[in-house]
Every structure is written in C-alpha cells, then in structure tokens.
Length: 445
Image 1: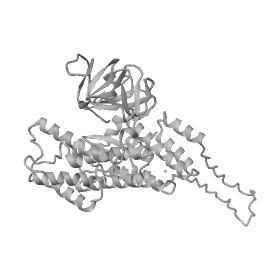
Image 2 (image 1 turned 180 degrees about the vertical axis):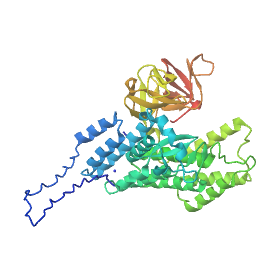
Image 3 (image 1 turned 90 degrees about the vertical axis):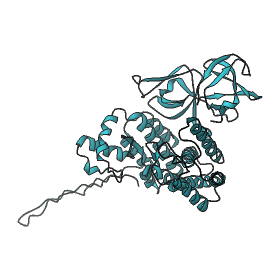
Image 4 (image 1 turned 60 degrees about the horizontal axis):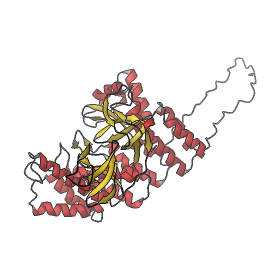
C-alpha cells in the first residue's frame, strides 16, 4: 500500500514516607530504575509484517502507534516507506473500513463552523461521537463536508509533522498534498478556492515533478495535476468558464497571472496558445450553454489539452494498479456481500484499482466505480503500446470494417488490450468474444 512521533511518557510519583517526633525513617532500599522500551529494529521482515497488518486492521490508532515505534529507529528510506504505506492504509480504511461508523460520523455535520469549515472538538456534545471524532483525528484524519455529507480525508498536514524522520522528497510531497487536505479545491461540483490559487497548485505539481522525475509518488501527483488542469482550463459544472455570453473574468485574470508568474512551465506553453485563441475570438464563450453537444465537445477538447500537459511528465496509467478479472465479477456499492449489485464485470476485463482492504478492492471500469472481491482479481502489467481505453461505447466487430457484423458493444471507459493495429482498426477481446474495434474511439488510458 501505497511519521512529530507520538510518545507518551508515564511518570510515577513516589511519596516519601513521613515521620514524626524525629523518628528515623526506615530505609526502603535503592529505588528501581524505570525500564526504557527497546527500540524496534526495522528489518525487511518487520516491514513486511507491518504491511501485512495494514491489509486487515480496523484499528488505525493502534497502527499509527506501531508506525511511530518503528520510525523511532528506522532509516530515512525506511521511514519514507513506512509513512507511505500508512497513508495508503488510511486512504483505503476511510473508503472501506468505516462502514460500521459511517452513519455515526454524519452526526458531526452540525458542528462544522460555516466560515472556517472546521470542527472544534469542544463543541461536540455527544460523548460517544466526540470519542469517535478524537480517535479518527489521532489516527491522522480530518473531516470535510461535501454536498451535505461528512467525509473523512487523510490529514497530510499532520503527516508532515514527521519531518525529522523522512526525506526532503517526502516532506515536499506531503506539503503538496496538504494544500488540498487543508483547503480542498473543489466541492459540490464547483471550484471553491480562487482560480489563481488553483493555478499555483498546478505550478507546484510541475515543480515537484521537475525536481523528482522518478519519484514513487509521481502517480498521485500526476493524478492531482490532471484534475487541477481540467478544472482550471474548463471549469466545473457549478463554476463554468462562461457566464453564458463571455469567458469568465475570474478565469482570464487567473490565466494572465499564471503566464506572468510561471512562463517556463509546460502548462504555460499550452495555456498561452489557449489564451491567444480566446483573445482572437474576443473572449467569447467557448460553447453555447444550452447546447449539450457543444458542452461535451468542449469538455473533450479541454481533456485533450490537460492530457497533453500531463504526458510531458509521464502517464497516470503507468503509475496505477491494473488488475484483470479471472471470472465474471460483481461490483457492489459497498465492500460487503449485502451491498447493491452495480455491475457485472466480464471475465478478462482490465480494471483500475485504487485501494484494497480486507479482501475488497475499490475498482473502476466501464464508467462504474464500486467494490469487488480481490479473490477474483490478479495483477496485470500496464502495456503502453497496447492498452487503450474506450472513449465512447464502441462496437466489437467480426472483422475490421464498418460493414462487418457486430459481436458485442464495449462500454465507454473500458480498458482493452489492442493488437494488430492497422488502417485505423485493432484486434481485441471483450466478454469472451474476439474481434476488431475502430481506433478512432479509443485513447491511451
């Protein structure tokens, strides 16, 4: 899975025996010295044992204590690995392991400050809820509100308090991630920070990847980078780039600010061309808000621009975990067999896995996101030369050509292995059927 140490000192107060009338106190002998706990020796074996415990533990506070004990004697490299594993565990546990307390956590909603969007622990009056909240905070979570729902997120700012044990690279990665955990950039389908501030996060992402091109955290930074770019260049549903007639001044001023401050970035190259095109058209709205086809075409154009910038630093897919189903596999709404059946993933389908815990994995495929049993999934290496993702529903045909019979429809956002690519067609398989698809409807994942 993709450390300030918390030390609790127990002090024992010894009360000396009191005497009266000048009576000589009785000697009790030399007091025993307090025994110091032996530091945990961190070896490859202890690292593997720690990682194994992360797969099933439902006690994040206990796991953090274990992590702290290990990091007290770990090397810098080991500390980086231990903390990265723990952060991965926190992310998986918040998505899968909190199902039993999820409804209870929703009771925190009234305690958010409407201005700071923070919770004051002293304001929580329910003793059980307060204890649960404190336990989650001690583990390394903070809470935000999204569309009226209380969501736990990893507190990267708190994780940064381990700066005395970890590498400079890890410190800088945590600072980058803390920008969003401290102040999320988007909520309720809208950008909730100044657009210019979002631009600074884009610049920070580029700065990290330029400095650490081979970083093990590259995939996470690339993913955030791509999300930031899509929102920055194309807006979100509740904060569009147009007011209906003209391009939004907030966005235009943010673009101008970025181009002035960060002219040597990859983003500036693409943004400069984009801004020039907007200027040439009098900064008119780039689409008719009442025309769904135009909005979709604009979305895909922005996605292409963002992808072109991200690709300058690498591929999100190359830094992601791909799994293939070994049987027809049910995707559920919750990580339990009573969860609603969302979709049946055909045998042999490649899925993107974000996290796993207690035998369940969070998976994405064919436009669906949910949970599936790890038992019926096995790792598959990403192949940039052959793996493609369908952009729309695409017909799998018996032979290359639009006149060929259709065997089955492959859903949009499905990853397939494509071979024999020639004359705009490629050979692939889906749901047990082998045939050909038009390469016009696929792209690199």
